[in-house]
Image (cartoon, rainbow, N blue to C red; front, side, top):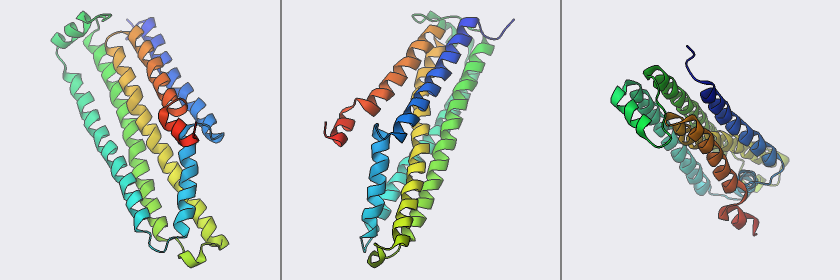
Length: 227
């Protein structure tokens, strides 16, 4: 007997496809600098070139520290989420009955519950690796900020090349942070699978639409683009 029914497999493929397609479209638009993330990447470059002209760079160090702290928070949250997901593996049959009694809920075996829970834990593990790597990259950014040439050399080719390097590294750190956050958002959509495969397909699309609106149709984007 197969572990999952055909509709479950279709719903899982739908979920993975929604995540992959959204990520691919976002990558294309970031190259064209049309979304909120791509605009912030431009401001990262502006920040680094502004930093070249400052004698005292304590403000820049504080900004990097704030970015590190936010990333560390999400990395710690990922570990807690992994522990919570693994705790669900020990759920009793009573919880399975409660889930089956929910609107649109379907009955599932303990093995199916455990497989779905492991999938949720994998998403949080992926998020942890993204946040952990982003935190390390922000450490590198802090080191490069400390290695920035003095303000009197701001117009030299070496100083400008250094600012570009720091901006690129900060952009990569932000990229991995955004991917970790995206995993969190899609993990919320994944929870629909515990009730019904049909609900998983609905929540997958809902998460993708919400994320797309925040990138391309939100108040924050209109504020940045003066629209």
